[in-house]
Length: 132
Image (cartoon, rainbow, N blue to C red; front, side):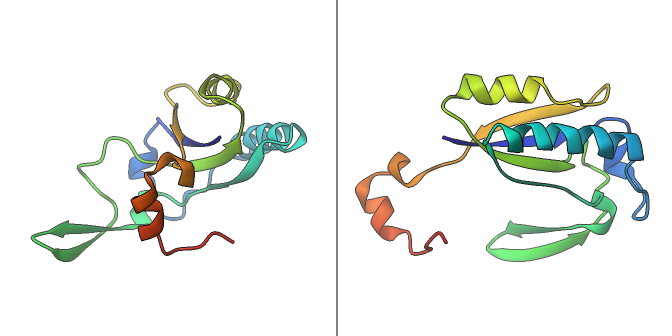
């Protein structure tokens, strides 16, 4: 099973300036954590994200896309990065999330990735994107 571990930073990340780098000690802690997952053979990918101030949102209301540039003042939580892991259970994914060297106020959301076998046959046939 694949799980996405989404890190939702506390401490004002949602309003961070475009050029505000992550602190070096934070990067070092997260790099060690990623290396642990890599050594355990479960890490499939992961990245940190730039702050929302340099992002954009595309909302669909009435079938029309509307683009809003960041920062997003109504946002209280935003994803700061992610890890894609492959483990045998939700419990194992949660155990890895608990090991994260997160800062005070951070949150890790654990979400299972939908796999082909999770869908009914007609839905699988409707899917046209192939995985590489």
